[in-house]
Image (cartoon, rainbow, N blue to C red; front, side):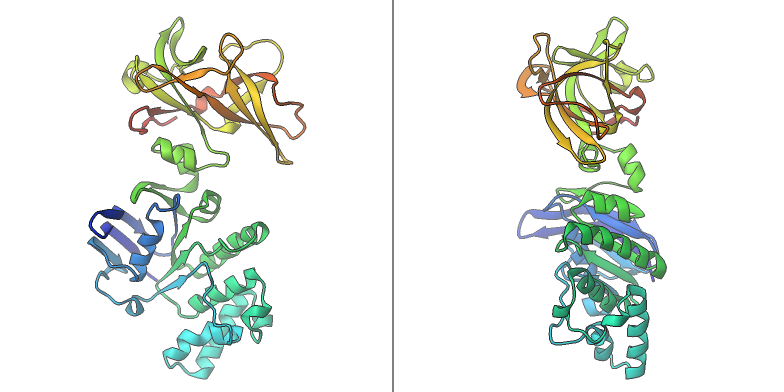
Length: 385
């Protein structure tokens, strides 16, 4: 077991394709680190450099305190689990799991012992004589993990291992992989594009975009305190509502202007110093922090219209557009404060039996303790809410 450190690691393909750009990241011994981001963000390239399958253009990569930039993959003492399982179809489960040990010329008794221990951890003891074609997708994935476990590596590397499974199996295997990692206590780097996997599995999560690390933190801190607009919109399902507006002085303090609507800025913010009074700003609010009101108009509320309704069983997601003074969808402003033609929309969560229909007009209020503000030009968080 060992810690892993990326120190300014960069990977350039060809002349100018910067797949990973100055990645600095530390994975502690025994930590479960998740690399998450959209397709093409560099997360898999980072993992492949760690495995030794891609050369590093610049920077240093160390495992257990030893720089491994020029160390062959077979000598790095890491085990990789791929999304396609990569099992030998003509071998039994036991043979697949013990193959790497056989290549090392370990004794039959030692191989049997290690395979038996791994099978017990993975709940595969009853399937050791079967071939991969006789197993379910989840069982095949456990065999692939077993092949990694028996090697007792310094680190596990997992490249979207659940992407080929159906929704129910993904949930089951998320729990299983997290259980096994905690049991073994081996540093693990897990790559996924699924932010739900990232939130539920990782001790910490590293969010990547365009080859660059955006933020690394615990799942809850990423959710509560996103460093920028991208992280705010990427982490969470449904994502954070991000409304672009102008920041002005109102009768009772600073307000964000959203078309004809006015959203009061909480008093704890210094609008001039923290947010940049007189310019554009992006205000973020999570769907669970949007309260749908009933009855008379309430101070601090805004008017919306239901554009779409999603019934999910335990809750209803309502997609709302902001309304202007004439009752039509409001427009938002651009960074220069000019009106553009894109309507400002947001999502709110409601109870499973809420009586709401498309076309209804609703008054909503945002929880003032849960606001996030981001710079309209750079997307950087202006102050953590």
